[in-house]
Amino acid sequence: MIAAIIAAAGSGERFGATIPKALISLGDRTLIDHALSALSAVVDEIVITAPAGYEDAIRTIAADRATVVTGGSTRSESVRIGLAAISPSAEFVLVHDAARALASSDLARRVIASLQAGDLAVIPGLPQIDTVKVVDADGYVISTPDRAPLRRVQTPQGFSYDLLKKAHASAGDATDDAALVEELGARVKIIDGEERAIKITTPSDLATAMQFLGATNEFSTGVGVDAHAFGEGRKLYLAGLYWPDEVGVDGHSDGDVAAHAICDALFAASNLGDLGSNFGTSRPEYAGASGAQLLEETARLVKAAGYSISHVSVQVIGNGPKIGSRRVEAIAALSAALGGADVALLATTTDGLGLTGEGKGIAAIASALITKN
Image (cartoon, rainbow, N blue to C red; front, side, top):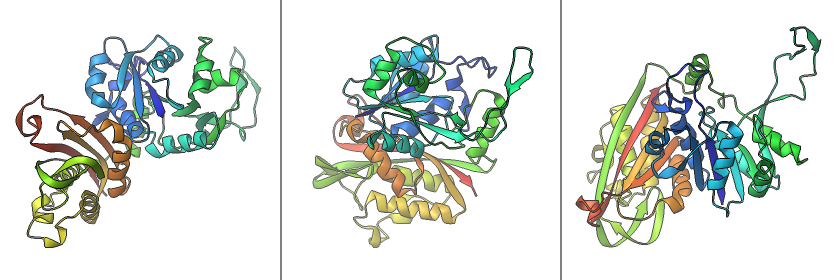
């Protein structure tokens, strides 16, 4: 099992904000939501360390994607608190900073791949391109080190669970977890980082981050909803996956409500009609089509209209199946069908109310953010 800790207990004082940095908005979402969406696509369990007094605000954002605990007064203390909340069955742990909100799922995957290949500590980094000077207390240059072997270190950083736990056993403090691991004499592998994993500390950093989002005034959002009643003898397809031993739903296609809601959200954002006008019963070629096929076709139409898909979020509403056990797999399937787009997947129930609460069917609601190319 792969777990992750997102350190989000920073005050935001250097940013000049009146709220914790993790709750500052970047585009249409908070920093913590960006970070959480990237990691939830690749890990099985997430713990967020929140600032005291803001736990409920972050729980609202996290929903069922993460466990939220109160962080400490330092970053290292917060990581130790998060580590204590992780399931002991975890093999590897990623430690990430909410301030590096735009670090991609691909970066996390590459860190994990290096761990699975045998490394016990893996951190991303970028070459140092500026000349660096060492100065004394009076501001005079002492030396000019060779910049070739230097790296600007980023997160998420990945470790074996046992090694990270041992590194934090001394209750030491450092600016990153790799430094504590280095003190044990363990080898730390550096892999290529990415420019978009910028640490957002000041308003100017936020402006730079907006450029990585491709942020312009030409963006559009849409919302889509889909629901289907259960049908005996039907197989259940949901969020791009087949769910054996579950009753499926009636429908013209495979009845994947999550995929269908996403399609409608994208059509709404790009003003391209809706699910019915594009793939409805008047189009017999889509009879029995999979959710993945409809998503791929929708992404093609959105792209042809001159848009790029920035983010998609979908929440499944029903008494079952339990999404959590296959969340990473489902996010990967949805993202792949959308050409690698950023996808968030949540689930909830209606406490026994309505079609889904009474166990008569399943529904989904999705939102989409697209930008004009």
